[in-house]
Amino acid sequence: MDMKHILRVELSQAAIRHNSRVIRDRLGDGVKLCAVVKSDAYGHGIDLLWPILAEVSDCLAVASAAEAIELRTLGYEGALLMLFCARSCGVGSDAVAVLAELIRQHVALTVTDPADVELIRLAAAAACSEALIHVEVDSGMTRSGVSPDHARNLLELIRESEGLRLDGLYTQLAAADDEDSTASVKQLDIFYIVVNDSSINSNVCVHCANSAAAVTRPETKMDMVRVGLMLYGSRPAPHVAPDIELRPVLRLVSHLMQIHEVSRGTQVGYGLTYTCTRPSRIGLVPGGYGDGYPRALSDTACVRVGDTMAPVVGRVSMDQISVDLTDVPGAIVGDEVELISNNAQAPNSAANLAAAAGTIPYEILTNMALCRRMDRVLME
Image 1: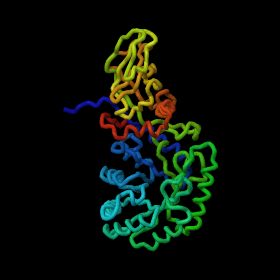
Image 2 (image 1 turned 90 degrees about the vertical axis):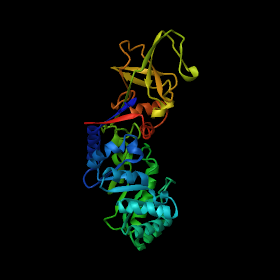
Image 3 (image 1 turned 90 degrees about the horizontal axis):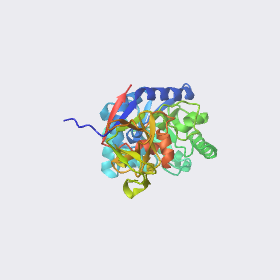
């Protein structure tokens, strides 16, 4: 028997095509678009979305080796960049074996340290194939990347290493979505010094722009931009390119499982944190923090039932939420409940839910990456 899951995720191909088109319009000609698909395509489901994401981009980027191999197994044959450095694959012979498979699968590898170079050199020999290398420079984020002072020596080591070919040079901007551009300008200055000092060939892809920088800071576009969140229809921050119309790709729906008719003073949910201030109709909806719907939305979010928004009342639990249906008198058991809207302006859009939860849209969406209780449906 094919068991029905309690939640349904609807994924709009038209929204992805639209978002990629408006982003490319902002980029202009000659700039490649790399679609970032890490964390299960930002929680959307890479197994369903990879063909459309491949269609609208020039390259895909993942975080880990497992994500890269998954994409190849699914059938993606295009350009693919792993953003974690080679040492993320482990140590010693285990790492060499993983890297050798990545090289066979034509996955471009990130290098940040001479130790990465040595692992990849051994892996390339084991794979009997050339490894494509992107060097990441830490221009001020203090996360991954080679320091600017050591970048030139690292690039020279790569040139001298048999089986390695420099394919890209990049950095990550820490504050591209800030209205104050001071930090980004400083990072760009540092990165440009590295680029100009490196004597790299013109066929080496230089890239630094993320979603926010790609559409707001023309000087960051370079050869390629890495776009994640905006392809999926959300902005990194409300002030980022408000003139660009983005269409959310994901819609999350459940249904009314039960309705209680209760009196004034009735308390609801774990901890009894909500007290009804009037005779009320309280609806129970399958779906909770076990499904990626944040507990921080307790008593703060709303859902859509029919054409009416209904507030979430009481604590979000692992498997269900309670909603106040008092102002939705026509609601009955079985009615659809929209938890996350694909209307960017809706109170229950990913962006607005993130604001209500005190977090960012990235977290709202990627929370669903590991959920096994959702039916994911690809829509036109």
